[in-house]
Image (cartoon, rainbow over all chains, first blue to last red):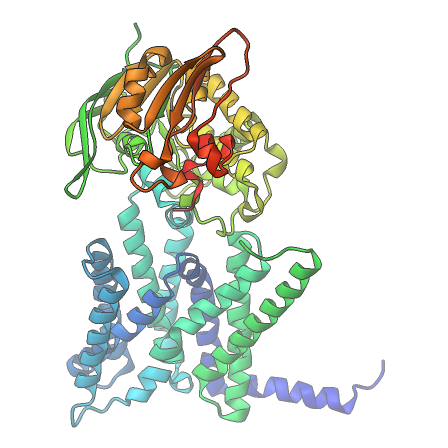
Length: 293
Length: 302
């Protein structure tokens, strides 16, 4: 057997580096959970053109974090609980607004959720409050420990279980609400459920990715998968794969280049999307397909 | 007399304060083919949506199989194609299988019977070979056949189709009319919103003529009388008796704004036996083909 070239050995050491650091292991676990949940929920968000909802919901969680802090002190658990509560309130609020929006759905969301975000900043910016706003806005993956991973696994696992059990109904409600109505599926409840699942997903990602970049991690892997697949199940699989790969690359970037983890995770997603966009553009032109849908 | 599958009593539907449809009273027996015709915005779609429970009823009563609207799963509704997201990543088979959801039940996956029903439905409309095609890649006629297959897979007793023949090629249109005949032969009642009055007369047992309210309901020859057509389509309509049949002429100059989309359709009642239908309108002079006048009304995307 030939000797391993020197560069291959060095590459091996480089790749193994983060895995040999014990403090990095919960980060890998966190990214894996986040990729699975975002990769599954993201395609529904994208196909239903609800990206703005995702962004609004992520911002609306902020006052919950602050209230968690006021109630339970500066523990990650208390703030996670606060975010969970705010996410549920926001998701149910949004589904109420959707049904009765005199000023237009998007305006109503913009008004209510920007207000919640402002309330969150107000609560956090008070003197004596020891929450670093930037940690919530852009995440703090390097602070994630095993206790955080456990919380993420419980909530994320719950989201995945519900998605798996109600997949058939959620697809029908997403594709054709008229059919859902004629089949007497509870369309409004399914829509509200999807928002709740989205809110829970955002809470799962809050610590790792933060509020601001959450929507990118939900939409970009889904959009990438949409370009290169033909059916929803394969779209979901590829979406999870792109999210996981980007998360992995992001962790290496964070470990070696000390880049903020949320940015290091999102930018590889964007690269994947760019590659898929160019590739499908080239192949489509090769087939003589105008690409106009 | 069999028990009606559909009973409508003095139906009124309003959108806000505007009355979209009123005064509809009728019964439909199993196995009947009913054409729902009238000008654009006359309430054809509204009528179908009311039956299936997609719009609220503001007056009167609809009973399907002894149930209120939206309470009976034995109703299949074929929507206008423009209302669907054709970029959604699903195949033809996926979409047709969706109609089985209520038979499959919550938390369960489709079984052999469901897949068999899907195969039968695809075969009935002649698109078995498209089963694994992504819906984005379908032609208009294929899209419509898929939606009809979905209604078939639902195994409904009452099938409602909202302008299924708009902008279709001749082959697809004929397939769809044949499928409708098959359904009727198997005791399924079919209600079809249409623009093509000649087709309504030729292939349907009964015609419902509406124009914001019910104008007539009965056999085509009675429902599409001169008097009724002029009532429904307005004073811009003239009926001319010619040697080769009866010509219905619309003058766009009499309409509100003269747009082609507001032109009423052309109909020619059969003259001498076997003579092909001939239609013309004043719109022809403006460069509109007869085809675009008879079939082109609802084709624009919603």
